[in-house]
Image 1 (cartoon, rainbow, N blue to C red):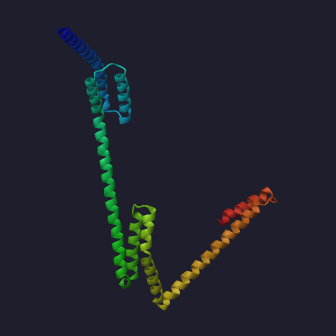
Image 2: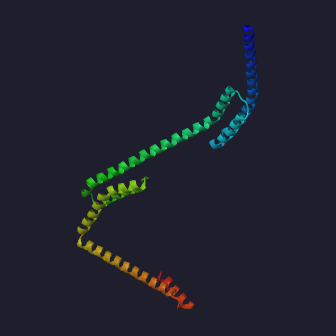
Image 3: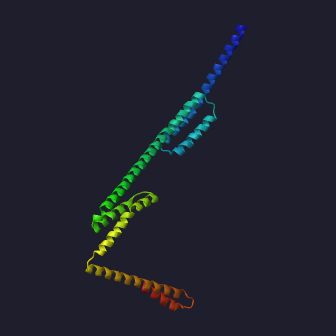
Length: 239
Protein backbone atom coordinates (compact mmCIF):
# COMPACT_ATOMS: atom_id res chain seq x y z
CA UNK A 1 0.00 0.00 0.00
CA UNK A 2 2.81 2.39 0.81
CA UNK A 3 4.41 1.78 -2.56
CA UNK A 4 1.08 2.44 -4.23
CA UNK A 5 0.84 5.75 -2.40
CA UNK A 6 4.27 6.74 -3.59
CA UNK A 7 3.32 5.78 -7.11
CA UNK A 8 0.26 8.01 -6.88
CA UNK A 9 2.37 10.89 -5.58
CA UNK A 10 4.94 10.47 -8.35
CA UNK A 11 2.18 10.32 -10.96
CA UNK A 12 0.63 13.49 -9.55
CA UNK A 13 4.00 15.24 -9.59
CA UNK A 14 4.56 14.20 -13.18
CA UNK A 15 1.10 15.43 -14.11
CA UNK A 16 1.74 18.72 -12.34
CA UNK A 17 5.11 19.13 -14.04
CA UNK A 18 3.46 18.36 -17.35
CA UNK A 19 0.79 20.97 -16.76
CA UNK A 20 3.38 23.54 -15.70
CA UNK A 21 5.45 22.79 -18.79
CA UNK A 22 2.43 23.06 -21.05
CA UNK A 23 1.42 26.35 -19.44
CA UNK A 24 4.93 27.71 -19.89
CA UNK A 25 4.90 26.63 -23.52
CA UNK A 26 1.54 28.30 -24.05
CA UNK A 27 2.74 31.38 -22.18
CA UNK A 28 5.90 31.50 -24.29
CA UNK A 29 3.81 31.55 -27.47
CA UNK A 30 1.54 34.25 -26.05
CA UNK A 31 4.58 36.22 -24.94
CA UNK A 32 5.94 36.35 -28.46
CA UNK A 33 2.81 38.08 -29.69
CA UNK A 34 3.19 40.73 -26.97
CA UNK A 35 6.90 41.08 -27.75
CA UNK A 36 6.01 41.87 -31.35
CA UNK A 37 3.69 44.63 -30.16
CA UNK A 38 6.40 46.02 -27.87
CA UNK A 39 9.00 45.88 -30.62
CA UNK A 40 6.70 47.72 -33.01
CA UNK A 41 6.00 50.38 -30.39
CA UNK A 42 9.70 50.67 -29.63
CA UNK A 43 10.36 51.80 -33.19
CA UNK A 44 7.95 54.72 -32.73
CA UNK A 45 8.45 55.57 -29.07
CA UNK A 46 11.40 57.94 -29.55
CA UNK A 47 9.22 60.39 -31.52
CA UNK A 48 6.20 60.15 -29.21
CA UNK A 49 5.17 62.33 -26.33
CA UNK A 50 5.15 60.52 -22.99
CA UNK A 51 1.38 60.90 -22.69
CA UNK A 52 0.82 59.23 -26.07
CA UNK A 53 3.38 56.54 -25.26
CA UNK A 54 1.60 55.73 -22.00
CA UNK A 55 -1.66 55.28 -23.90
CA UNK A 56 0.01 52.74 -26.20
CA UNK A 57 1.55 50.97 -23.22
CA UNK A 58 -1.86 50.78 -21.56
CA UNK A 59 -3.23 49.04 -24.67
CA UNK A 60 -0.47 46.42 -24.51
CA UNK A 61 -0.93 45.98 -20.74
CA UNK A 62 -4.63 45.38 -21.26
CA UNK A 63 -3.81 42.77 -23.91
CA UNK A 64 -1.46 41.05 -21.44
CA UNK A 65 -4.24 40.84 -18.84
CA UNK A 66 -6.58 39.19 -21.29
CA UNK A 67 -4.27 36.27 -22.09
CA UNK A 68 -2.73 33.55 -19.94
CA UNK A 69 0.89 34.34 -19.13
CA UNK A 70 3.34 32.81 -16.71
CA UNK A 71 4.43 35.16 -13.93
CA UNK A 72 8.02 35.12 -15.23
CA UNK A 73 6.78 36.22 -18.65
CA UNK A 74 4.61 38.91 -17.07
CA UNK A 75 7.61 40.24 -15.16
CA UNK A 76 9.78 40.21 -18.28
CA UNK A 77 7.20 41.99 -20.45
CA UNK A 78 6.58 44.66 -17.79
CA UNK A 79 10.30 45.33 -17.66
CA UNK A 80 10.36 45.73 -21.43
CA UNK A 81 7.47 48.18 -21.30
CA UNK A 82 9.25 50.16 -18.58
CA UNK A 83 12.32 50.40 -20.81
CA UNK A 84 10.20 52.17 -23.43
CA UNK A 85 9.41 54.94 -20.95
CA UNK A 86 12.94 55.23 -19.57
CA UNK A 87 14.32 57.67 -22.22
CA UNK A 88 11.26 59.89 -21.92
CA UNK A 89 11.45 59.95 -18.14
CA UNK A 90 15.19 60.70 -18.26
CA UNK A 91 14.58 63.59 -20.68
CA UNK A 92 11.85 65.03 -18.45
CA UNK A 93 14.06 64.78 -15.38
CA UNK A 94 16.90 66.47 -17.26
CA UNK A 95 14.60 69.28 -18.38
CA UNK A 96 13.35 69.71 -14.81
CA UNK A 97 16.92 69.95 -13.54
CA UNK A 98 17.75 72.54 -16.21
CA UNK A 99 14.70 74.63 -15.33
CA UNK A 100 15.54 74.46 -11.65
CA UNK A 101 19.12 75.51 -12.37
CA UNK A 102 17.94 78.39 -14.59
CA UNK A 103 15.57 79.54 -11.85
CA UNK A 104 18.34 79.31 -9.27
CA UNK A 105 20.65 81.38 -11.47
CA UNK A 106 17.90 83.95 -12.06
CA UNK A 107 17.40 84.29 -8.30
CA UNK A 108 21.15 84.77 -7.79
CA UNK A 109 21.29 87.42 -10.52
CA UNK A 110 18.31 89.23 -9.03
CA UNK A 111 19.87 89.20 -5.57
CA UNK A 112 23.11 90.58 -6.98
CA UNK A 113 21.24 93.40 -8.75
CA UNK A 114 19.28 94.23 -5.59
CA UNK A 115 22.48 94.30 -3.56
CA UNK A 116 24.08 96.56 -6.20
CA UNK A 117 21.13 98.97 -6.05
CA UNK A 118 21.22 99.09 -2.25
CA UNK A 119 24.99 99.59 -2.18
CA UNK A 120 24.80 102.37 -4.78
CA UNK A 121 21.98 104.07 -2.87
CA UNK A 122 23.89 103.86 0.42
CA UNK A 123 27.05 105.23 -1.19
CA UNK A 124 25.17 108.09 -2.86
CA UNK A 125 23.43 108.93 0.41
CA UNK A 126 26.79 109.02 2.13
CA UNK A 127 28.44 111.29 -0.45
CA UNK A 128 25.35 113.15 -1.65
CA UNK A 129 25.71 116.29 0.43
CA UNK A 130 29.12 117.05 -1.08
CA UNK A 131 28.19 116.28 -4.71
CA UNK A 132 27.17 118.84 -7.32
CA UNK A 133 23.50 118.77 -8.23
CA UNK A 134 24.05 117.47 -11.77
CA UNK A 135 26.35 114.68 -10.54
CA UNK A 136 23.92 113.72 -7.79
CA UNK A 137 20.97 113.80 -10.19
CA UNK A 138 22.76 111.60 -12.73
CA UNK A 139 23.71 109.03 -10.08
CA UNK A 140 20.18 109.02 -8.62
CA UNK A 141 18.56 108.56 -12.03
CA UNK A 142 20.94 105.66 -12.78
CA UNK A 143 19.84 103.93 -9.58
CA UNK A 144 16.17 104.51 -10.40
CA UNK A 145 16.71 103.13 -13.91
CA UNK A 146 18.36 100.00 -12.50
CA UNK A 147 15.37 99.56 -10.20
CA UNK A 148 12.91 99.93 -13.09
CA UNK A 149 14.82 97.37 -15.15
CA UNK A 150 14.91 94.89 -12.27
CA UNK A 151 12.82 91.77 -12.90
CA UNK A 152 11.17 91.27 -9.54
CA UNK A 153 7.65 91.05 -8.06
CA UNK A 154 5.82 94.34 -7.66
CA UNK A 155 5.85 94.19 -3.86
CA UNK A 156 9.60 93.62 -3.80
CA UNK A 157 10.23 96.58 -6.11
CA UNK A 158 7.96 98.78 -3.99
CA UNK A 159 10.01 97.90 -0.91
CA UNK A 160 13.16 98.91 -2.75
CA UNK A 161 11.53 102.16 -3.88
CA UNK A 162 10.80 103.01 -0.24
CA UNK A 163 14.50 102.61 0.58
CA UNK A 164 15.25 105.29 -2.05
CA UNK A 165 12.94 107.83 -0.38
CA UNK A 166 15.78 109.52 1.56
CA UNK A 167 17.68 109.96 -1.70
CA UNK A 168 14.64 111.50 -3.35
CA UNK A 169 14.22 113.90 -0.43
CA UNK A 170 17.89 114.82 -0.58
CA UNK A 171 17.59 115.51 -4.31
CA UNK A 172 14.66 117.85 -3.64
CA UNK A 173 16.69 119.64 -0.95
CA UNK A 174 19.65 120.07 -3.29
CA UNK A 175 17.38 121.50 -6.02
CA UNK A 176 15.90 123.99 -3.58
CA UNK A 177 19.36 124.94 -2.41
CA UNK A 178 20.46 125.40 -6.01
CA UNK A 179 17.55 127.76 -6.66
CA UNK A 180 18.33 129.78 -3.55
CA UNK A 181 21.92 130.21 -4.72
CA UNK A 182 20.98 131.53 -8.16
CA UNK A 183 22.22 134.95 -9.24
CA UNK A 184 19.70 137.75 -9.65
CA UNK A 185 19.73 137.37 -13.44
CA UNK A 186 19.17 133.61 -13.16
CA UNK A 187 16.36 134.12 -10.69
CA UNK A 188 14.73 136.60 -13.10
CA UNK A 189 15.03 134.05 -15.90
CA UNK A 190 13.38 131.40 -13.75
CA UNK A 191 10.55 133.77 -12.88
CA UNK A 192 10.06 134.56 -16.56
CA UNK A 193 9.87 130.86 -17.35
CA UNK A 194 7.31 130.36 -14.61
CA UNK A 195 5.24 133.21 -16.04
CA UNK A 196 5.35 131.70 -19.55
CA UNK A 197 4.34 128.31 -18.17
CA UNK A 198 1.44 129.84 -16.24
CA UNK A 199 0.25 131.65 -19.37
CA UNK A 200 0.40 128.43 -21.37
CA UNK A 201 -1.51 126.64 -18.64
CA UNK A 202 -4.20 129.33 -18.60
CA UNK A 203 -4.46 129.27 -22.42
CA UNK A 204 -4.80 125.48 -22.35
CA UNK A 205 -7.61 125.71 -19.82
CA UNK A 206 -9.37 128.35 -21.93
CA UNK A 207 -9.19 126.04 -24.95
CA UNK A 208 -10.66 123.20 -22.91
CA UNK A 209 -13.51 125.41 -21.73
CA UNK A 210 -14.24 126.57 -25.29
CA UNK A 211 -14.24 123.02 -26.63
CA UNK A 212 -16.53 121.86 -23.83
CA UNK A 213 -18.91 124.74 -24.54
CA UNK A 214 -18.99 123.85 -28.25
CA UNK A 215 -19.71 120.22 -27.46
CA UNK A 216 -22.59 121.13 -25.18
CA UNK A 217 -24.00 123.45 -27.83
CA UNK A 218 -23.85 120.73 -30.49
CA UNK A 219 -25.50 118.33 -28.09
CA UNK A 220 -28.55 120.57 -27.60
CA UNK A 221 -31.58 119.54 -29.65
CA UNK A 222 -32.42 123.10 -30.77
CA UNK A 223 -29.68 123.39 -33.40
CA UNK A 224 -30.41 122.85 -37.03
CA UNK A 225 -28.05 120.87 -39.24
CA UNK A 226 -26.17 123.87 -40.72
CA UNK A 227 -25.41 125.42 -37.33
CA UNK A 228 -24.25 122.11 -35.99
CA UNK A 229 -21.83 121.82 -38.93
CA UNK A 230 -20.53 125.34 -38.29
CA UNK A 231 -19.92 124.62 -34.61
CA UNK A 232 -18.18 121.35 -35.48
CA UNK A 233 -15.83 123.35 -37.75
CA UNK A 234 -15.15 125.76 -34.88
CA UNK A 235 -14.22 122.86 -32.60
CA UNK A 236 -11.86 121.47 -35.22
CA UNK A 237 -10.25 124.91 -35.59
CA UNK A 238 -9.82 125.25 -31.79
CA UNK A 239 -8.10 121.89 -31.67
